Length: 99
Image (cartoon, rainbow, N blue to C red; front, side, top):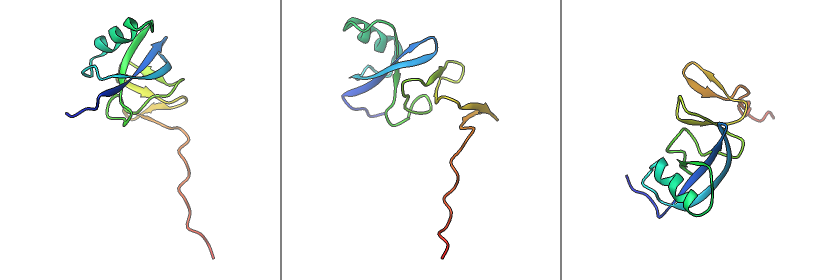
């Protein structure tokens, strides 16, 4: 798997994403990510996340939940339905313009 020189990390507190930062690439290793962040003076539990959503379901935002059971970031208000996280209020499909 290819990677860039930078990665992203989310600070998790009580299962909630409290902040997301850019860090040097840490081999997709949560222990290494947390050690790096703690080592530069950012206490807490940090986990790797992907800006492109390639890991943990999607790129997290502040206020997302981190679900350890599914190892995914979950947007506020989403529900676990039929084995996957879903938006309970999906956007309406765009209608064709009428003339």
